[in-house]
Image (cartoon, rainbow, N blue to C red; front, side, top):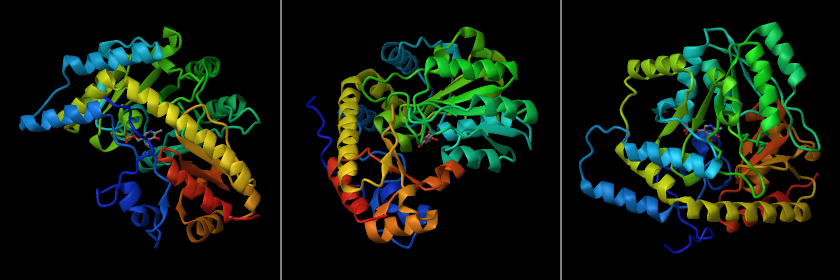
Length: 392
Ligand SMILES: Cc1ncc(COP(=O)(O)O)c(C=O)c1O
């Protein structure tokens, strides 16, 4: 296979792409002719090996009911073992078509209506959405901004646990939007508190593969087995390989009672059927996509370096948060002195950029925007030119 040219522009218009074709509807904007730097969805074709596997499966032509086969499990297990030094046990696996629907079902299963569920702001917006839309309450444990990057506020967390007795904490690791990869010691400290207060941690690890050079991803499943009863990890090949619309994810649940209860909920909703094309794609990605992912990570790291330097020169008022993973840039625009509405209007009318507004990540996101660096360099050049038009 020849190496992928990540600089290549692939036209995504008229493919039903949320990022490119539905900017106006999703962001409630009148404008559509904007550079889409918002949703976490990159603009690269998935690996050639995955496309070939999909072609073969499509050519077979029969798409009756399908089930995850041995090669699927084996591919995921070997990937996590070799890529992350993480031994997974096959019996821990449960699958559902996406991480967000799995999180929503687990919220229904592991908490009662009205219960508080802890998340760390700035938080991925869908966390707050599924908590509130399932009749639970968002209990925020805001991250602390520091020169070393965002940190957990353990004191505040313990106070939340003591006062509100939440049954659940949703963790995002690597963290969307800040790009933090929580360390072994931070995760251990978190688990000490959670197990002391009988709080189950659901760790959304969808970004696990997209670490930056020199950084490592630590799963909650890397922690001492003593914590296993209190934790669940959610993974997917979707972010790593650009397969989000194919819909497949794994929830790894070591606790047998929780796992069986989750499987029962899946059955109760008729969610025990698997999409043949998703499984083909995920299996091929994990079995044959490693070299492609290495190249992608290199390209994303170069993109980030280039963007940081260009930003410092062209828009020095804008401060980029130091990240350890993801292809997201969390940009502090507070020096512009605009409220969030005015900031959005400036981005649309002056910069011609559709960004994710920080305020959609909760109060901690006020004055910030999130930009997606998972795109050919040419789009980053356009984004920099747009940001350079804004002045404090
Ligand atoms: C932290 C996180 N979890 C989940 C998702 C979406 O997962 P899915 O499409 O599998 O529901 C995203 C997408 O951006 C995300 O950033």
